[in-house]
Length: 102
Image (cartoon, rainbow, N blue to C red; front, side, top):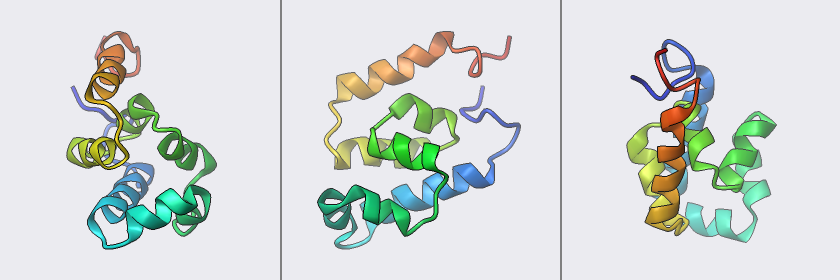
């Protein structure tokens, strides 16, 4: 099973990975995000729904959007999403129709 809703990683997944990589691996990016998340995310010209799921820390939607699991984990740690919360969001996908093969 893959975390993508599409058969292969999409442009949307690439954009999400790019944002999360830069946010958590480049100096001062997390600080800029924490100061003004909307302004930071606007740099990337993300579709509104993807920007909203990052800003809202929607772990399940980020995962289903195809985010690299390691980048998603770095995001959860970086923005201090409690581990039990992030794991609960991922576990909720076990019954998600878009996640299961059948």
